[in-house]
Length: 487
Image (cartoon, rainbow, N blue to C red; front, side):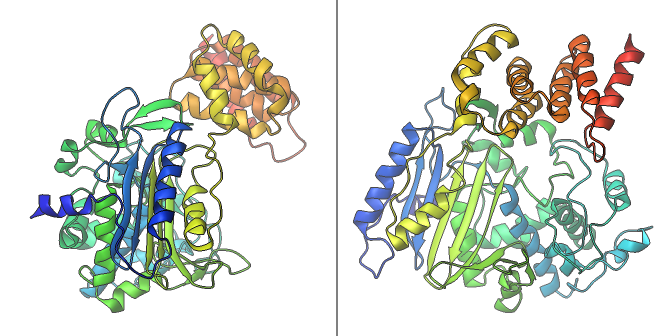
């Protein structure tokens, strides 16, 4: 039965007669647009359902650009922070069983909590109103022992008193994941599999689910240019999920499975209406204007049509996933990409506007950052030579120092040191008075083991120390000390 269900879900475009936000002609035009966007750098998958019927469910591009495997509705993508809705649903599943209450304080689960965190409740973690820091400064793949991770997290100051504000916190959902483990007695992923995924018929979702090894997984492309491999392969190589990520991001899934998830929530097969509806309730305002609220793992806001939007997006900077549910209009839009570029994040909203308002879809463009990185990758020679080529082609087009700084540091993270240094060299030439940019250049040299130019860059950073609030000075000073001690 499972293979039959997948086959039925693999429909591309249906033209069933219904009162529709998009007729068959609209959907065909959208499909043509996405096909053209593929030629302009788009890579991913799109699913549109109306009133429980699939209207579009198709992949665009290949799982690896040098390969031949096409992206389909059964290709694995990193869903990013869309993971939070699974964590929230698992918490509510335990609440439904009487094993938890959203009013339960976390002091019940963690010993020796600092006093300012004793009264934090599950409700506050679920709604990002606990004041918990976003993380401990570790990467998604930094494996910190469980007790150490939470001790370090709880030692950090709160942004505000619990319940007195809103601050999006990835780490808050990692706390919830740990509570799920402590209450259920099984791992976070195992609980989700048994309580949520299996009842929903979702057999292609998880972190380390062995079945995932058999599926095609979309490789990531940083800035649409630098292949980073698939998140799935990193998970299986580590054979564990690090706490900086667990419960708050990085869950793997397919478009077909995410469609089953949407159906399960509406059919009450995983949660009864009483507990499911708490997920979608606008509990806490996300901004001062009150134009968007956070539920439990979901954002809730009005649409331009004065209907309700319920959804969430997520990204690790390479992958992007968007879950857009419009219950009043009975429309579901799922969007996944493995190559986040300038136009990617706006595309799901643009699709929605196209369906309802017939607004023209803008030309899909990768943007200047992708163009800069692409030219650097395709230019041979030293960082200085690459910098000269980039300067000739882009110096007059760069109007924001953050463009090269962020791109350079991301390239450092992926060990593309020559390209990173080329971008950062150009940045300090264009914005020579900014000490933070010199610190970034120094960091690239330092991590690449080039201590002499690193010392020069960090020295330039310190020389540009502002009168107050120097957020890079400690790093520059620490690195200069390390270089001195190594001499």
